[in-house]
Length: 259
Image (cartoon, rainbow, N blue to C red):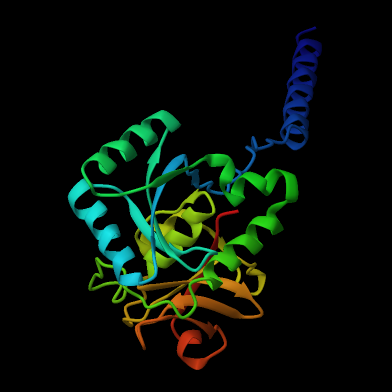
């Protein structure tokens, strides 16, 4: 009797061992997978209400007003060549039309500016992007950049890192189209979304290291066909250059898109 009990116990233990062994072979651990985070393309802030003033034949007069507004009144000001061939100044970025008008009126009463115009958000090219598509905005950025060709480069605030204040050009072009691009070239580089050199599109920005330290020290606006517009320290004018030139090929850091 005892022999039968031992045999039954042995069979039971064997069955348990086999069961556990089978479980180990079949019950495979499946690691929990998490979806990879999707990096959202950075979106630049949109320009609000901006004050436009002045109509100068000489660029120096527009620069003088620009610097006065920036240095003495703390306003983000820039000048540009309008379609009527007069240099005009835009400044400020106000949340409401009323606040822009009040500030403009106070400057007029202080004899800082004369007549003024309030640029509204719907006046910018970026407002037409939803209706006409991104290509429309890209073409507008290129057109604005080309309007600066040959204009004497007189932006102030040049830094030792930037040499000539090339980022002033890119910032102005974007702001004139309703996109609030940062002021500094390094900030512009950090804000944008990386784009392969072969995938550059019109209106993207291209960055270079002209100091040989592999850090951003120059920026231009890509206009297609391997060319870009930038504020060159050679001759002090806005000009077109080629990305394929030996000089810029060897100093190219990368491209950034914001659209």
